Every structure is written in C-alpha cells, then in structure tokens.
Length: 408
Image 1 (cartoon, one colour):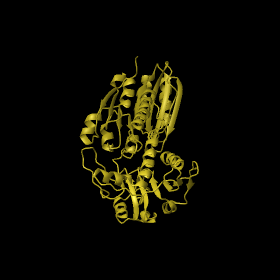
Image 2 (cartoon, helix red, strand yellow; image 1 turned 60 degrees about the horizontal axis):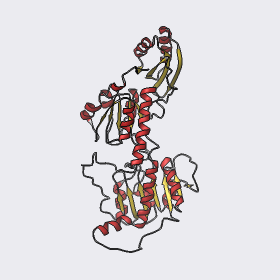
Image 3 (spheres, one colour; image 1 turned 90 degrees about the vertical axis):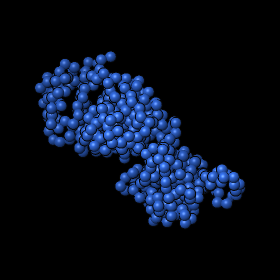
Image 4 (cartoon, helix red, strand yellow; image 1 turned 180 degrees about the vertical axis):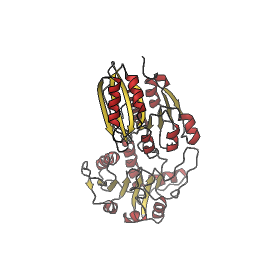
C-alpha cells in the first residue's frame, strides 16, 4: 500500500525493557523497531533516538530540551508509565512533539500492592519472615492486628486512591480521604476536612499524589508527628512527596509503627547500581524498588494503551490524551483525501495565513479541526489530493509553523 511515508521508514526506539507487546503492536503497524534494555542519557540517547520518529521510555530516561533540539525527526514520545515528570513537556510541545502516558493501565496493580502492604504491616510479616530466614522462631501475637475496623487515610482520591478505597472497604476498613479538589466518595468513604484531620485520625496513611511543587515534601516531621503513635505510612506515588530522613527519625523513635516505601527521592538508574537509604535496617519497614505498577498484566496493558496512542498519532494525526499538545482528532481519512498536520505557535494571524494558502492552492477542504493551547496550536486538515503537496509547502513556509507533515 502506498503511503505518504513508507511505513518501514518510520523508526521507533523503545528503551528500558518496555513490554514486548508494545514492539509487536508497532511492528504490526509496519514500523521499524529498535529496542534497548536500559535507560539512556546524553550522547548515547541522541545516538540511539536522535533520528527516531517515535520514542518509548519509562521512568528512568530523562528527556531534556537539549535532546529535543537534537531529535529533529521526532513526532511523539510514549511514556510507558503513569508519570511524565521525566520529560520536559514544555520543550517537547514547543517543538511539536506529542507526549502520551498511561494513566489508567496499572491502577489495579498499585491498589492491590497497597492492600498487601497494609496487611503485612499490621501483621509484621516482613519482620517475621526475616527472622525465620535467620533461623529464629518468634511466634507471638504482640503488635499484630487485623485490618478489619482500622481506618485507612488516602491522600489523593484519583484513579488509584478511589480503587484502593473500594478494596479496603471490602476488607472491613473505614476509609477517609483527602484531595485538593472536591471528589465524590465511592462506597462509604468520607472526605476529611483537610490533610491534618486525615493524618490525626488514620491508623494507616497511603499516598497517591503526583509530583508537583505543592506535593514535594508533603510529609515531613510535622505531618508525621500529627499521626497517631503506632500508625503506618505507605508511599507508592512519588519519591519527592516524603522527607525520608524525617520518616526514618519517626520510625527509629517508635512514633510510627512501620512504613512501606516504593519510591525514593533518588533512585538507581539500573539494577546494577547499589541502593542506599536511611530506612534500611529499621523494624517493620517494607522497601520495594519502584514496582507499584510492575506486574505482567499492568505492563502489558500499558504497552497496548501507549502503543495504540502512538500508532493513532502517526497514522491518523490524533493527539487525543496527549499531555502537552491540544487534543485534536478526526475520523479515519477518506481514500480520496490527503490529511495535513500543522503545528504552529498560537499567535494572532496564523489561521488567516492558513486560509490564504488554501485559497492560493485552489484546493477543496473536506474537514478541518483546529485546537489551541496557551503556546501551541494543532490543526488537522483533510483536503483533495490534487494540490495537497503545494499546500503543504505553503503551510511549512508560514513563519509561525513548528511542524507540518502529510498523512495519506
């Protein structure tokens, strides 16, 4: 099948051992796939992906303005994870590079892990198991509790927090939640008056907030002191949210009864690097290596979700669910038409220039959709085949143009 760009010439680079389902989906679309098992940075990253049309990463690869300046053929980045703080989204958007993530695919995996940790902390399973591995038999009910009737405080009542709420209630827990926006509760959960109110009433607190300026160091010595003596803290959200040194002090003093931490302010970039933390060696503290969403099921779901978004962008021009460009979509392209994608700076007068170029080309417009953000506008235009190349060149000549390409 003849296409505007031969499909095999569309290069996709996948880093960080992304689930093979993504490669299979993209290969089925006809693209050429290059896979790397680890994160890359600097010149190594540019050497591998500088000529790619699409790049897939997870949380360890950091995409800077310098990378986007050097990756001149890049049209899209797929973050095969929930977060996008490893990507300079403004720099990507300024160059017309659409960025996608997977905000829905691993919520169940994270919620189930939290339930597991709540039970393990209340029963001190980590300590009991460690003792058994050392040959010590310590059968005792001391400081071991059922979770039925206990109060779970959820900070951040979004997709993960709300699902956790339902699971916890099904096990007999009372649920309080705090969110910066007004959110309707699921089941019998109750919204706390504020964060301090939640902290003071919860037997176990689980954090589910993004990495924002407002959430960095959300939990410090002050907040830990507000929690009841013997309470537990769980963080499967972002490493910047909890002051680890303060948490270590609260655990060492006995004020907190335990913690489960999956994310850290500084994390090794590969499995070969040594991990160190003030939390190591403390009683009833579960440490895991950022595996909240690391289940086979979640990774496959993420691969399909993000991979599908990348294919739709390249084949259809759709930016639906992009996190840094206006969301634009049109139905599948009619065989008699060519589709032109035009990304431009959002300043007055550009639409007038587009319409003038269209009139000059003497071309019929079958469909057009323009959506603008604060800095960038994204337009899809379906036009007659005759004259589409002339119009494309005219669009590229508009001074405010960032990127333009045909799809047919």
